[in-house]
Length: 269
Image 1: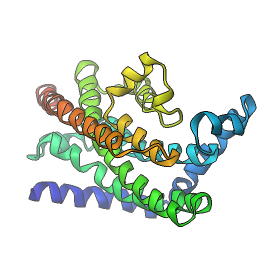
Image 2: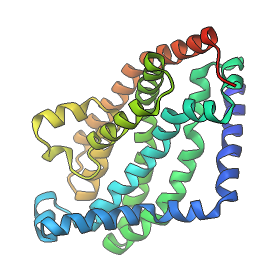
Image 3: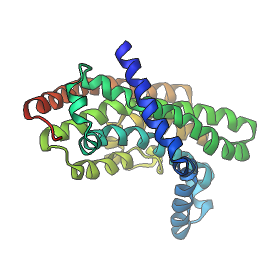
C-alpha cells in the first residue's frame, strides 16, 4: 500500500507540475467540452432540427451533448494515459526505470488515473455545473454532482479493460501507436456518449454492453433525460462492476506478460 501511495504522489507531481507549467493547457481543458459540444451541435443541426432531437431523446440537445462531451473527456484522460504510457516512457527514456522498479507494473498503472480523477472533478465543477444550473436550476447542481461522481466510476471501470487491451497489444506487436490509434476511437464510440444506448440497434447495443463504462454512461444519460429508475440504475452499475471484475484477471496477465517481455528483451535507452 505504501508503494501505491508513493506512486500516486509521484504521478500527481508529474501531472500537476506539467499543467501549472503550461497554464494554457488548463484553459484548453476547461473549454474543451464546450468546443466539442459546439462542433457536434453544428453538425447535428445541419442534418436535423433541435426539436426532433428533443422529441426522440427526451432532453435538449445542448445539455445532452455537453454531458456527453464531459464524459468523453473524463474517460479519455484516463484511457489515453494508460494506453499511451509505454510509448511515452520509451520515447522519454524512462522505460528502463519503470521496468527495473521493484514495484509491480499493474500497481504502477493503477496509480496513473488518480490525478486525472481529481482534475475531472474540477472540470465538472467549471464546465458542467454552470450549464446544468441554467437548464435545471438548483436541481441541476444535484444532477451535475451525481454526473461528476459517476464519471469517475465510469473511468475507473474502464481501467482493467484499457490495461488488458493496451498492454496486450504491446506484448503482441511491440510499442506501436498504430494499433492503439485504431482501437481507441472504437472503444470511445461504442461507449455511446453522443447516442443513447437504448436507441442503438441490437448489434451495437451488444458490443457496447461489453464495455464497463458504457453502462455508467447510460445511467448518466437516463438521469439527465429523466428516465432513471432505481432498478435500472442498480442493474447497470452492477453490470459495470461485474465486467470490471471479469476483466481484472486479463489486466493482471497482460501487465505481467508485458513486464516479462521487457525483462527478456531489454529496453531502448
